[in-house]
Length: 150
Ligand code: FES
Image 1 (cartoon, protein in one colour):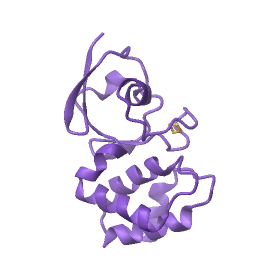
Image 2 (cartoon, protein in one colour; image 1 turned 120 degrees about the vertical axis):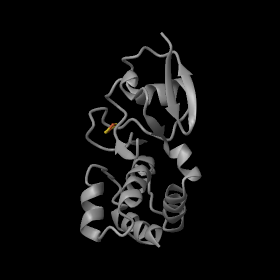
Image 3 (cartoon, helix red, strand yellow; image 1 turned 180 degrees about the vertical axis):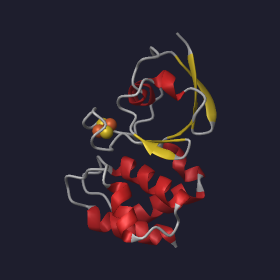
Image 4 (cartoon, protein in one colour; image 1 turned 90 degrees about the vertical axis):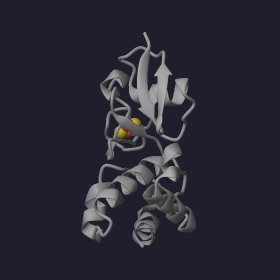
């Protein structure tokens, strides 16, 4: 069955079954490998993408529930001024260790700074609570967020 999704600014026809979780469509059908499959249970944030400006997990919800919505993956963030700034700040602060959680974190930080460009530290920490990093790169992530605000 054909399903049309709007991903990174373009209409994309996909052929995966409509109940396939979005992350499998992104990674396996469309080759967008930025979002990672971690827990698969909406518990770790590794699979986050922007959906109409909100950071949401893509590992459980079926692809057809994203019809008519604007999906932006980490691959598409460079076209957004906030997303580009966040990506650059993550690079300049080496805010990744193994990197598995990084795409989800970049998406979550972008969503936060788009709606609250001057978010204080507590707000940042609260917003990033769903994004788990086992390496412990949180201090560098927080420094990257501060730079991305400027
Ligand atoms: Fe989706 Fe962990 S893989 S939240």
